[in-house]
View 1 (cartoon, rainbow, N blue to C red):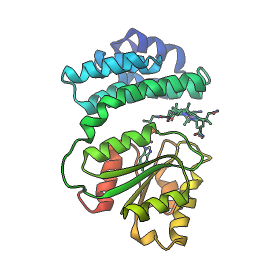
View 2: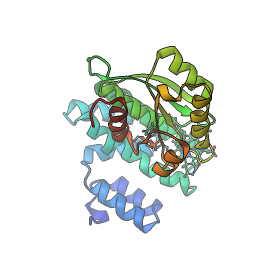
View 3: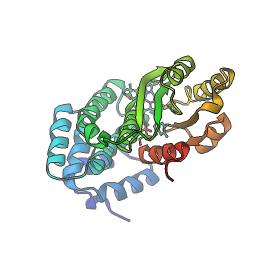
Length: 249
Ligand code: B12
């Protein structure tokens, strides 16, 4: 188990010390950040402080210096958002600050996207992705999309606040065989179930495989709602999509 002093960033150490009170979370995050390279923790720090110009510059520098895009994404961008989430939950920061952090995250993601999305091969399958009705969170969905495209899927991104009808319309319009739904609010999770029911009512349920994800979603909830699969993170999203499309594990 790592110690706080093992984390190679004064800023991250101070943030953890001040804002992460739960012992289990603290231990988990200390272990995690202690294993991340200092230049990636600088990216995390820029996300946590909502400095979008720094996130942009530091991400570019890390990539130019040869750090793989996936590592920059995990150890820099997503790692920053983990602390933002805890500070938001505990009311240390509020929506305006989180929006600034999300903007910084997007400034970094802009550079990761083309690298992870470039595959140049015949699409494995066509996927419709969207965040369900009532929900405006899109960072996680966008990460999933980047990795799906990078793995060779064609992805139609419907965006956020997507109704069951819009999901159905998109499947019909694009003849897609896979649907991915994201939800970050416990209040919007049931809309995944409503969308699946709408596919049944439209007599289209047998034509598509449906995967779901988002921080509050669990494998049990996914099964209860009648989804075909659940994915915990963007890497799992790709694994699940491949399995559902019958193109790999
Ligand atoms: C950023 C953020 C915001 C931003 C969103 C900006 C944006 N463009 O997305 C803003 C400020 C707008 C916002 C608003 C709100 N938010 Co908010 N937000 C967050 C925060 C801090 C981070 C979410 C995030 O981006 N995480 C990082 C990404 C990488 O992780 P992820 O989304 O989980 O995605 C990964 C996996 O889940 C998975 N995945 C995701 N989707 C899918 C889909 C498929 C198919 C698969 C397989 C996998 C998969 O892969 C992803 C990548 O690894 C979370 C806290 C948290 N810990 O989650 C709160 C949080 C989700 N928000 C919360 C709340 C309450 C709100 C508001 C109601 C606040 C308010 N009072 O207005 C509003 C709701 C607005 C709305 N109608 O949607 C609560 C939800 C509580 C609950 N249980 O319902 C949380 C948990 C914060 C808290 N209180 O603890 N929020």
